[in-house]
Amino acid sequence: MGSEKIPAFKGFAYMNIIIFTPSSHVEKLKQKAKKLKKELGISHHEALDQIAKQFRYHHWHHVTEMAAITAPTEEAYRNGVLVAYDFSDISDCYMEESPFVEDDLAMYFCEDQLWQAYLEIDDDEDPEFHDLPEEERREYFADDYGRFAILRFTGADIPQDVEYVLKLTREFTFWPPQFVWIKGNIYNTYGAPVTGSNGELVGVRY
View 1: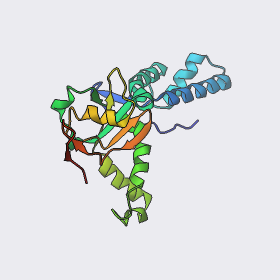
View 2: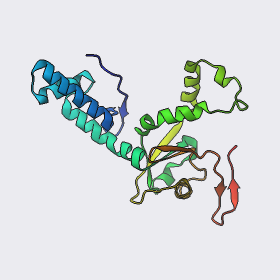
View 3: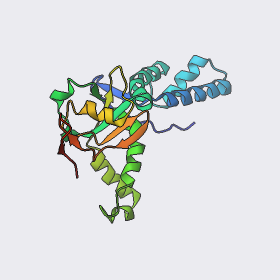
View 4: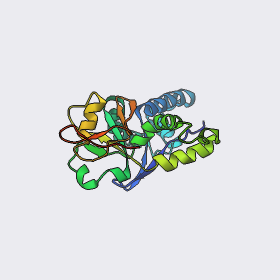
């Protein structure tokens, strides 16, 4: 039984390997364990542990631990709000007072949508980009979007529209986020104007 590729990264808060474990992956593992139990005639618990080990987990409890770590990110992506900034556009001192926290797991949920957005680069902006092999385009993508910090909204009242998200972010950073996600939908906000307290225009990205 082959193993699928599962993303993992070094989690500084836990000083160990954190395995990205969304709810859909947990369900797939449960289905594989159910099948293994029937094939080998072993207990449900044994089957869960064996399947977990095939996918780089130590045991089934390790799966549930990783799922619990992934859950807040998944909830924010599917039912809440995420915002993406270039690291140079945000300041740690202001972030401490904001309702947003940096989320290292968010890119796993957002990467496919960011890739699609990247593919929409205008031919006039970079006429040779679309003629490059996908591998090279992926390298450019990794260089450009690898500088992103994705933040998760942690407030009680979840914003329902992009304008309100931008209003919240203006309280802790001058530039708006480059992308906003609301309930899994991505919005390109790179060119959103920066306005002052009186609504006057004070900055625009080009």
